[in-house]
Image 1: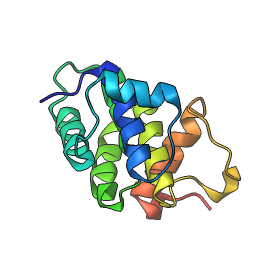
Image 2: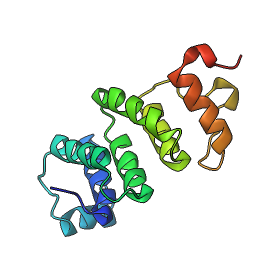
Image 3: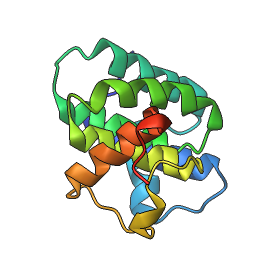
Image 4: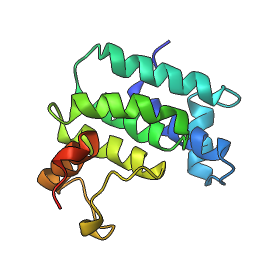
Length: 143
């Protein structure tokens, strides 16, 4: 099973609800529209992980959306997967890198430099690259 790209945001909403957060009517409607009600969140997370690894179309928008969604799961067991994907994406796609970084940050991993004072953006590509590389190899961290 491959989750269609247009359904990935609904998966993120399902993860949000599974974590006990309330959803607005649009998010609920989106989950229903994509027939995701009652689907096991772990199954969906594994399906997204498999799709990322298969990378069938080679397009970054699917991966970016999938990383975004996985970041909404708030599941610490995803840390090793996200770390491995960070190693790949930091040399491949900095937008995808940023989504992974947000997911790791959601899991309280020290991915962003303290010097950034909690301010980060997808547009700070060079800073994001530096932080990702420092996270992956703490010996390269800039003081």
